[in-house]
Amino acid sequence: MEEKNKNKFSNVEDCPIRNIIDRIGDKWSVLVLLVLEEKGTLRFNEIHKTIESISQKMLAVTLKTLEADGLVKRTVYPQIPPKVEYELTERGNSLLPHLHGLVTWAKGNMEAIQVSRHEFVVNQ
Image (cartoon, rainbow, N blue to C red):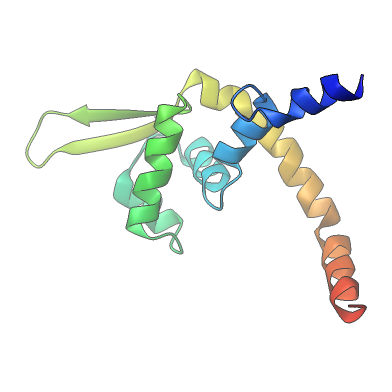
């Protein structure tokens, strides 16, 4: 039984928890998804203005990762200058209720977690 559990958690590629959380658990992905949910279809600069603290390079990387996972759709319009828009896909929308649960949990526990962190540092 112990060997079965060990194998269950050791292969990153086959572990949906590690594989997916690794992709959306970075500093920016959840925030980008929530912004697209709230504001709808946006251009790159509109997303960047909404999340001022993200660099353009990091936003581009984050959007590419979300697009690769099928959570965000990128639409390029053939005009000059090129117009590119980003929106949530059906898969991206299906993730939102779970993210909202995490956001609610984080809001409800943040103060206690900060106290725990402080106490941990003080007791070290």
